[in-house]
Image (cartoon, rainbow, N blue to C red; front, side, top):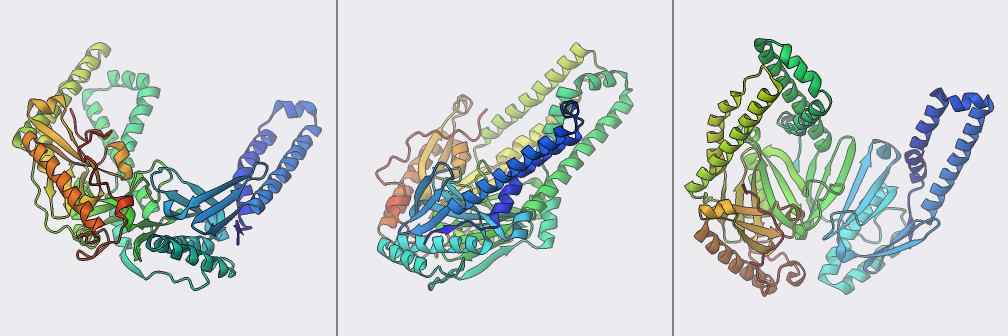
Amino acid sequence: MPRTLSPLSVPYRVFQRGSGIAVALAFVLFGGSSGLTAIGPAGPLALLAVAGVAALALVGYEVAYVRRFSYELAGDTLDIDSGVFSRRSREIPLRRIQNVDISRNLLQRLLGIALVSFETAGGGETEAQLRFVSFEEAKRLQSELGRLKRRESESPAAGRDATEESIDGEAGGGRAGGGVTLPERTELFSLGRRELAVLGALSVDLRVPGILFVVVSTIGSTVVSGYLSTVPRATLVLVGGAVLVAVALVSWLVGAAAAIVEYYDFRLVRAGDELQYERGLLQRYDGSIPFEKIQTLTIAENPLKRYFGYATLYIETAGYAPGSSGGGRGSEAAVPIAEREHVLELVEALEPVGDVEFDRPPKRARERYLVRYLLVVGAFTAALYGAVSLLSLSVPWWPPLFLVPFAVAYAHATWLHRGHWLGEHHAVTRNGVLRRETKIVPYYRIQTVIDSRSVFQRRRDLATVTIDTAGSLSLGGRDAAAVDVDGARADELREELEARLDRAVDAYRAGRAGVGIGGDPDDSPGRDADAEAPSPDQDAGDEGPASEPDSD
């Protein structure tokens, strides 16, 4: 039986659309408009009359929209009919629906309504939305669609029968009926106040310095240059130091506030064959991450987190970033911050990797990094020298040379934190210093293996082997990659990955895969290899559009 949106969505939608009209009306009435005063006292009355008619039309439209919007779980599809003047009917196959995400802001929580977003595999945008249903109905849809997808994957006929039973038992007004059994929920992680405080303390928004630099360079460059030419050098050093401290403090405050607002009361639970999460202070998110869609696990650490023994775990899914509103990071923080040992335990629960011993790049790769960073210091020094000469500034040009020791140390750190490892069931890579990312990729998730060598790499017989998956981050060239490995080792690595990919796919088709995400090492996850895994006949070495993660 088709269902409609919540009646409480009418006042909320009117508030959403009418707030802009109200602001414009107030500006015209109280902004001293000369046109209204010229007309006389009838001017404001006429404006109010027009605004009243517009408000009535808006209310009427929203009432009609809500009444004419319907959705239904019918057979193996989600059917949505919408539109007031132009009708639109959509049928979304249940097998394509990847996630059902629920979001609620403060006002929506007060009204007891929620926005439900249906995400499909292979798309970076929302496939369909229900604006808005009751929160109970949103949770029912989330659990019901998950149950029907599980039935559909096991037996299409059983899935259709389950849908019919669900429809027959839905007379309860938004509550799961008709014998719907919710999967057992096991809490894997919850973010306590201590961890939330640590997350805020270790979060820095690096966008703030860039924004301030753009503002100063575009608006106040003339004022700043004139001021620098008149200030004594000692005062200039003090002012510069104070500015740097202020920028760092603002960056930290902005990052801390954003992290606390985003991950307040974060919880991660395991429900059946999916992960479910809740998070958010001002905007509350409630979503799911199906195990069958997980492509890569990423452990992320910045220097502060490494020093204090913390880490973040990200889960990358196939073609969609759960919890993002199109154009998000491309993965969901399964654990925003926790002690590193706890993160590793959770990784083992999801993907038993075992002990990892990384193979670092050859030492000649470290020379490449040193040359690169010294060139950056030299370019910065030359730019400052040119600015001082052209603008006749009283600023010395040589201070950037003090960065040379840091360039040497950073080159060594880049080499030290880079490596790769091939296990029995997984490929693991590690890259980055300021943001070190350890990526864990099951062999059966590999789409292609790409061997790329830039001009600078070929001079030193180095190569980058990129492990491409169907994950959303792959679109931006952020795959797992063994960077700057020896040329001969790159050839071996590519052939070995191709062979292990073929064996992993064969194991799935034989129904005896060794390890699956969220599964037991001795248990097959029961996944449709023909639909999810690359074909063993596919050449895993075909060149693809992925970009090289690290190039000169």
